[in-house]
Length: 165
Image (cartoon, rainbow, N blue to C red; front, side):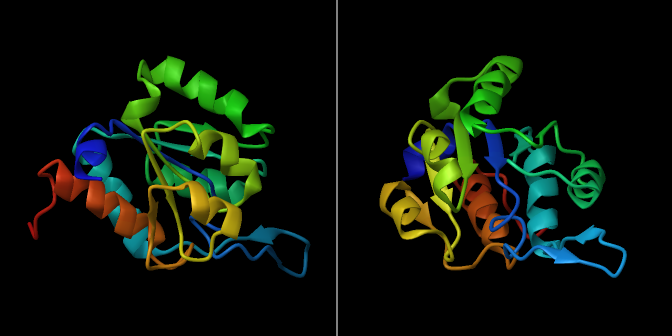
C-alpha cells in the first residue's frame, strides 16, 4: 500500500456518501443542504499545500457542493456527470497524470469504473459491498464523518508531508 500512496499526485472523490454522509436534505424552500466534515476539509487543504491536485467527480450537482469546492480551492470540479468515467478521462488529461498517480474515493456503483482503474482506490466505511471488494483501502470512518481525512492523511504520511505543525 505504501508504494502506491507515494505515487499519488491527484486526490479525487465523489460527494454524496464520501464528502457527506449520503443523506439528501431539503429545506422548507426545496433548497438542497449538505453537511461536510471540517476535518475532511483540513486534510484536503493540507494535501493541496503539499502539491496534490484535488478534484470532485459527482453524478449530482448542487450549489452547496460548488460552495464547498470553492472554499477548499479544488483544482477541478465535475458535477452532473454520468457516466463518471468520462469526467475522469478529462481530469487525467488536464492534470497530465497516469491512472497510477490518482487516488479516488468512492462509495457506490457509479464509482466502480474509476475505482477499478486508479492507482489507489479507497472507500468510506459505509460504502456498498461491491465497492469494498475492489478497493485498496476501506476507511474506518464513514463518508461525511472523516473518511476523506483518514485517506488523505495516509497519502500525506506516505509522502512525508504530514506533521503536527
